[in-house]
Image (cartoon, rainbow, N blue to C red; front, side, top):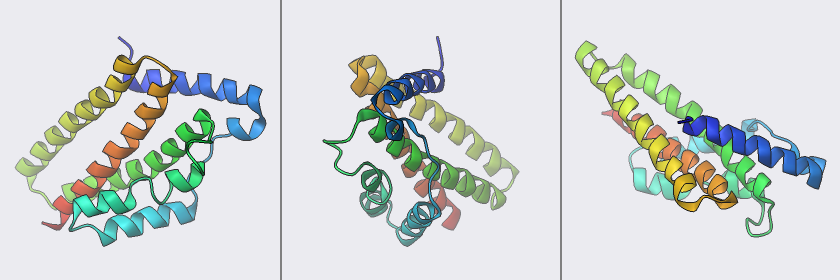
Length: 165
């Protein structure tokens, strides 16, 4: 069985190839801008004590949705790319928050935190892969990308919260 990441990358390559046929602007992948990174960092910091509100205010509102414009009019490849851009920011924050959390823990707590993180990674991958398994169509690629961003955002904010305890 191929990994969910492998399947996502393969699907995105296929979307990119379709984007090349549609026009060069749709096929380009981009990295997050400094402004986008700062916006998510600031939002996550502002709502560090209120995870639910942080998710409502920060997730998709500051990067993915502005990136794609009107989602109902955007090409699927653009929508997926926007979710991937947002996910890359959240994934960076998640990793920073995890490392920062580990610095505050003793050896026993660190071992438990590593186990917790491995279990979460398996949960995220299995959950997001289920979109592909259940839907089995091109829409699953968009939903998988959104799922990865959403789960990474939730985890990044939770790890920051744990760090503050």
